[in-house]
Length: 243
Image (cartoon, rainbow, N blue to C red; front, top):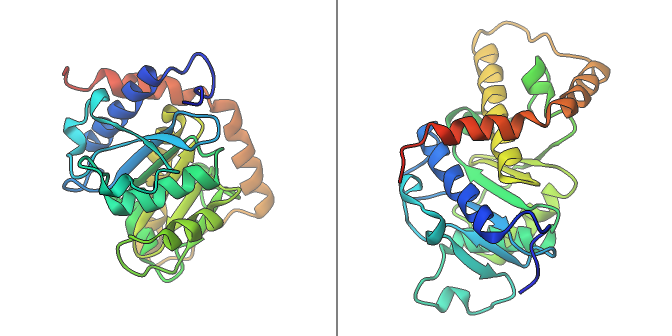
């Protein structure tokens, strides 16, 4: 097995962080029956990664429940404890193609999904939160139903390359990050940003769109606040029911 990204991030720590991320998202109202998937790479090249089991509710996922998979294992879907085929084709491909995408979160949160269902789902910079993602958001508008083929993962990897957020047209949102805390923080702020834009559009009034220069300055300004992610994640974790 390849070593973790760094010696301070043990697989046990990563299992705990990722399992808590599932439960946090459920508490925030972003789970959906027993679907949707989170993953986290355990090797430097991304080929080995953790993924939630098939059809297990977010609220019930414990560290030991997470599957440790190898994206080079061509027989993984034939095994007794096989992951969901859609999750395998997307997350397995993303980790293989984009090793820098350490953590991959995919949900159908309400406002991000509403945004994804617009004919033009561009996250226009109109405030601090929407501008946070200026230059960081990719779009895939070729929805063709539930993903269950390798080609889907390849297309999403191609679209996401160089970005950290993927708006999946008629579908939802996918976030990648270096750590679970950073990915959860971006997911949190993206949902807030989508909510702001949807509400502003619903007024029927013209939007006060920031210039590219101001939007980029705002996005750059967020870099100094990266430490918020760990503190926010720690707080959200503290609110979870004890296992």
